[in-house]
Length: 116
Length: 116
DNA sequence: ACCGCTATTCAGTGTTACTATTTAGTGGTA
DNA sequence: TACCACTAAATAGTAACACTGAATAGCGGT
Image (cartoon, rainbow over all chains, first blue to last red; front, side, top):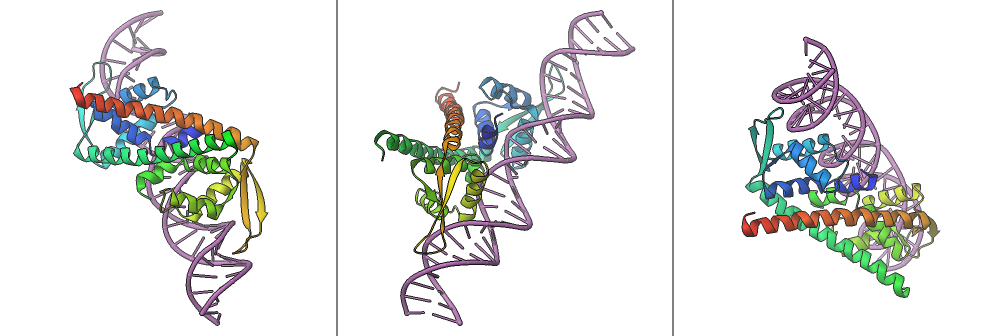
């Protein structure tokens, strides 16, 4: 990851993973692969597992061990009620921030057009 | 700040401050006040000054001491060429992340409509 | 002499993503 | 057997960041 992206993921990666789980339950290796496909090309397993352990400790997800045909058992995570609430909060926080930043960007573009 | 917002500001607060400086030069106390007005109601001076010192060390800004009528001299920061480049990079990183997150949100909403 | 406002600095803390490695299970192949 | 490739999870240590709380400094007014 670029350094800027690494810092930006702090506070958003967790929300992104919860959002992925909101669609359907998933396990760590699978989530890592999906994030990689979606453009976060050098996210590594360790990072994702750390988030999963954290959200499990905070009781935002339910966990089920499911045997795999191809390796050790999978830990399948699914969003629970509390996790759903937390995700809602995340969307609120994110929307607020994204709006402010969009305003800042707009302000710069306006300024450059006509010299403010 | 809420805990979620605190974490989300990591990596974005710096970009926001550079964006503010891209419009016009400003000093720390002023930047703090502006951020507070714009909704980041409990950002404190210490946080902003830490960012300013950091971006000064990285040579992204020029600094000028300007006497104040109302207190100790102000350190007025202005974005330099290198800071401008860095800010461009920030917009790129931010846009990428914001798009991915928007997709995730859309995906959830679609899923909820028709049970995927 | 004291308070309020302006203005900057700094040591210490908690949280986070990253690095690099280890452990485990299955199947294929030389 | 021994070895590798792939799948799957865990973990110790590190760096970077925003925050807390306090200190310092200058000015004006009472």
